Amino acid sequence: MNIIKIDKQHDLEYSGFKLQKTGLLPIGNPTFEQWQECGQFIQKASGAVQLWLGDWLNYGEHKWGEKYAQAIEDTGMEYQTLKNAAYVAGKIDLSRRRDNLPFSHHAEVASLEPEQQKKVLDWAEAENATVREVRQKVKTIKRQLKNGTKEITSKITGQIIEGDCLDKLPDIKDKSIDLIYIDPPYNVGKDEWDSIMIDDYHDLIHKSVKHALRILKPNSHLFIHFPAHKASWLEQFILASFRIEPSSRIIWHYRNLVMGRDAKTKFLNTYQPILHYAIGDKPLNFNQDWNDERFDVWTIATVQSNFEEGKFHITQKPLELMERIVEIGSEPGDKVLDFFAGSGTTGIAAQKLNRDYILIEKNKEYINVIRQRLSTIH
Image 1: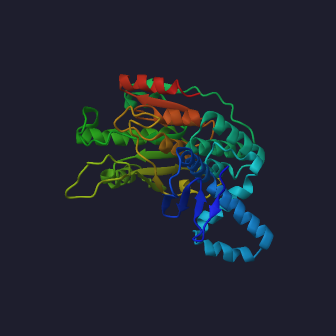
Image 2 (image 1 turned 90 degrees about the horizontal axis):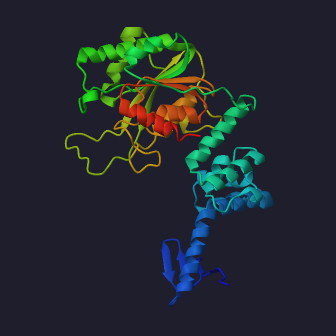
Image 3 (image 1 turned 180 degrees about the vertical axis):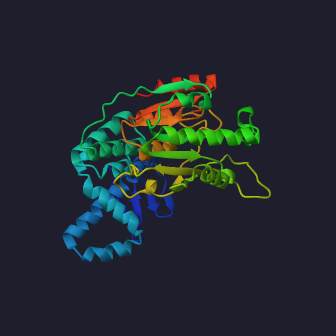
């Protein structure tokens, strides 16, 4: 059995290797077995070091009180890193921690009660859940607790309507929708479906917003997605037509563009605006935690074909983005409407979050994509 040693330079020695802050060096001529065992040690340590740090901090505070503050300063580590480690370790007892889950998963459940922590960690381990899925699970639990610990049991009917939205929207009742998301063609002419005569385009936007204001409930939310170079025009167009101004101007920031896109005379665009209109005084459905979702810049990767959710449409929005809009802009059991559904990501977000939904899409091919994607949601 190998023993961890600390040399005079405070470097670790284990299984024939010296582990320094800047790298790893062999001691003599290690065997294959020693090399393998050292790798296993590194793997285990990398997953445990933040919980070790948290336990170390909490023990020091309990044992030596004010003295431990100087010891913390001597580590040279950032205050927020130390604070997070101590918080998570203090909230999650050793008996509830999972060897197979990283610190990030534990951090997501730390704010829950012990029994809920155990349930979520058990689920995450069994389902091999990502940290985003764990975060969503925690948010759902908190929403349920906020609503009186009762799960919403209203039936999701989930309408998918094939046709032009301007032809289909008159059939939707006045004041019947809690959240509307509009992501219209941008009219930049890159594809046939995205190339419209300017007067027709203005008419499309005007009628879309007019219908939205008619069918939204007195207390509801409207989100309109638009390209950065046209957002100011859209805002002024809506103001002139309907005398309403955005409550918020959200910036969706993405940075995972494919290398090779080269712009000689301008900087690459890495954001899109989303205009948010609060209708009436319905509060946004924020999580209790003070986190990024409360601010108006959201950094979320744009969809790529190698992502787990898949890419089915050239302008497909990330599921994480749509989940955030649906979750913050509505409550469980509410009804969500997407005028230009594309590949149906809004519907997937709504179904996952226990919202009813109506999706309108005129392209038959994408109607089939929507049905196929929704069929995989349980």
